[in-house]
Length: 264
Image (cartoon, rainbow, N blue to C red):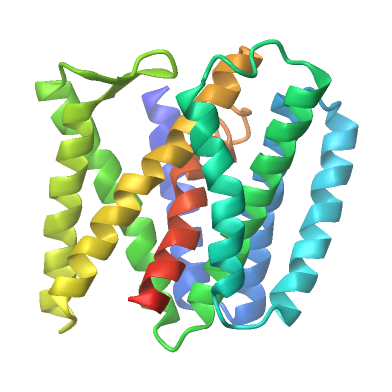
């Protein structure tokens, strides 16, 4: 398993970084659409849609998202509204996590719509971040932010973890892990501010808040899989599970990062 994880990471990570750094807008948009469409397919399949229909619906949503990427206006007001409309009910779902286990038609429909909309919002936000004059820096900074947060949470949780964050949703996560992630992200943001001559008083709290809220995306994906009684969203990425397993935190981090950078 570890060998598969390493090989997959060594192959895909450079391709992702090359697409962000050197890819033209079209190639970057294509990569984002591919990632998002596969994540949508996985979420639809988790929520009991037959594979063929899941693929068809993911393609349709991908095409519509590509259209939005071309014609969506630059102001982020629509992201704020969409984020509230999606992540408030998702947060309520996490707080009342017993809802959804019955897998009734209504429950599946609500979970499906919220998940697909959140993924579309993630795709649009990455595209908006990349189109900025500092687009490469913005995209890479939020990607590395999530990686740093994951590493900080892993080591802190493994060595100091005692109090469970959400045992009924994701038993492995602890409050100590969250604190470790926050410390790691604060250091990361401070280093970025020094290296690139940025306002640390703005960047550090922005990145810490993004990292904190990204936990919601992680927990939502975990709860969805737990209610569907599956361990991984798919087996597309050997050793890693599915695309959704790798990008669940980014699904909320992307839009939040875009909003905070634009309004603060």
